Length: 192
Length: 163
Image 1: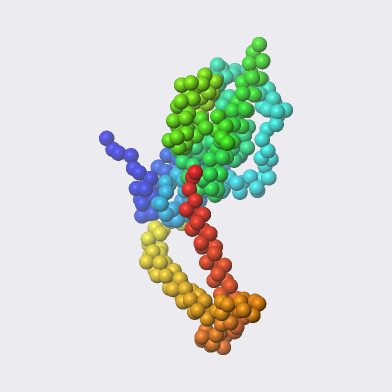
Image 2: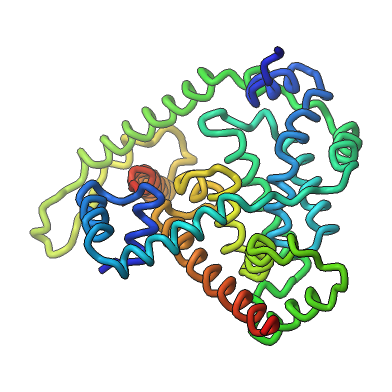
């Protein structure tokens, strides 16, 4: 069985001139990068655009990756910077969805006629709650739980101190828990 | 003081000290309310770990590779710059700046008998050509001190670790 190539081996191949090898890195991390971008853009189309832009930037500056840390940490720092620039450019309202809007989100989802049981699961609401968080909160949760990044690495990505990242993660989880409880409570009330 | 919730999160994340861990384990055995809160947080943490990643469109990789074809091939950093050259240049600069600083400090009158700090230097020692005026040397030394403080700040910040 052929062993999976490491990130470093792929990077070496790309730097040696094998441009196609980069597709392996894109395939490997596209879901992570796309999810992270989505935490900022809140729209799939824009998230794809940002994610693609990130991979192109990463390719362009691949020689600048110093290999001191994980490749993903370096890649996610590009995603974070690019997504922040996107937010500034588009002047997206980055305020968290307030209670009224929250209800609108719920209403729109409830109005869908073919909503199956699976989608109504706790996971579905958890994703919905993450979507309603501030980009910073949503991205720190995604980086910690899905991006396999330590607090030190998250701090490096976000350009903050490790202790600040720890506090931010704690607060983000607290806010997410409240949002989820609100969503589930609202759902339970509707079912009664 | 940390809240019970914060302590539990730190415990789950493996970020608490051994003493704190022992304290939490004791509370888990003795305190029912704490136990319930722990179970609630643990379940929430498990759910967060199990959430799925979002999937981009089918043609995502193809689209990225299409854009990359238009880009210039990235060169290996080793091919671009030899690190020894960079370190050599950096060492030369540090040596020159250290020498200038050493001469400046050696020539300074540190006694404040006259009521003010006397930075009386022999500027002729620096006079390599006519272009180096007294003001230029002072400005250069001031700039050196600022750079030195910024570098020290950078290193100390880097050393700060997670508590």
